[in-house]
Length: 536
Image 1 (tube, rainbow, N blue to C red):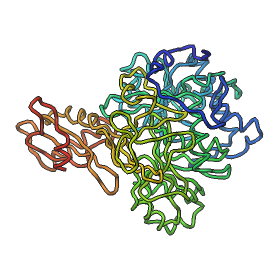
Image 2 (tube, rainbow, N blue to C red):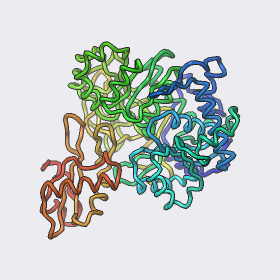
Image 3 (cartoon, rainbow, N blue to C red):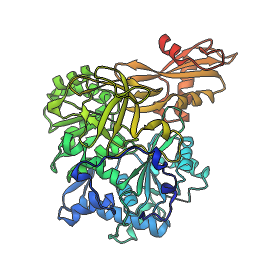
Image 4 (spheres, helix red, strand yellow):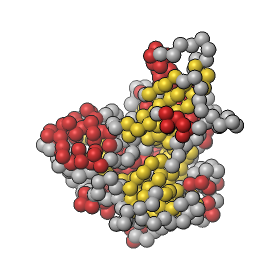
């Protein structure tokens, strides 16, 4: 089988074929040639076909055309190959808040046949080190603003051989190297099934998993949900809050706007106040964010009605019927809901505005199949809660991970979500089937937080769960047993919360924290989380 990868690490560590899901390519648009480079299709094509002068990426003080983005991506591609010695198949860590240079770096990695490993800006050195080791990452392009944790991770990761910083001064910066390079680059003739993305997800155990996605997968998610549910045009201006490290953000803030020939606004800070202001100031027409942000922005509904906003997409956490109604009443716009997964790359169940139903996620996106099954994989009748099973043109491929066998069963992807399907074929979210906490659109594994808390000398033992919250979907709640000699109280609570913020990504810290005498355990010492949920 043809591959452009000289570094065969990714292909060598794909799951065995009998552990991979069944892939569906029923839509005509999904019939890809053997050779495919997604950068050619998403970026170079627009310039080649005469649309190079159209605005592509906007940011405060920045407006790049498609030709501008192509120029920068080509120069970075040359830097990767000539200065940094990259060969096709090498992994490249990308680290920045959402900004134009991160987008240019991502396309450069696609062009050279590399594998992009985009990371959350908030991750600490410890978390970066795990990613670097699991992915055997050899190269990194990092925003200078995030250099401190990057340097710490690099010092502890001997396999990371080349690091360059952008938005930096000096001869060693990426921008300085780019100026010495040609503006034309011949994209590597990658195979459609060459891996181009490692998307990391912590799962329920706190041990990161790398999901592997091909060039054809990137194009598949562009040809399914956006074309059939979103139906954006080249005149749309996209904007959103999810980081490009989230596949939800990668699609909504890079892949989908470029596929449509539209433009996108990239914001380094995109909390509800900043997102509202940017929607207004940049004339955004399509927004991607989590229900938490929609609830916060709804109070400015009258002002939003005066903007160009016309399509609003919700994902990242379950959308409640009350949030849908609140947003519709405030803005007059019906939210487009959807569920996706890092393992599936993007949204696979959704609806358009005319088919929205309160409390329902929607129906399978064209190109995908979905059903609700029991523990034995048997399909359940409508109205019965069970496990969500999905298949389509994308699917789970964990990098050398035994958990592949749990996620993929009988050709179906089991997403870890509990759903029911009604008599009309609409899917209704019930809960997570595991201990993943989803708060404000962030996936937080309880063991990550527990591990951080246990590093504090005052903590004897602890347990973390998610508890319902009307604003965030769920809150991270910790139950902590203190060592003798330590005093429970608000001071200790703040000390532990600040400690966690400094140890791991700050969004993971326990906003709720109870001090307890002991944790509920079985006679064999196993933690009884269900009793903590009952207490909460």
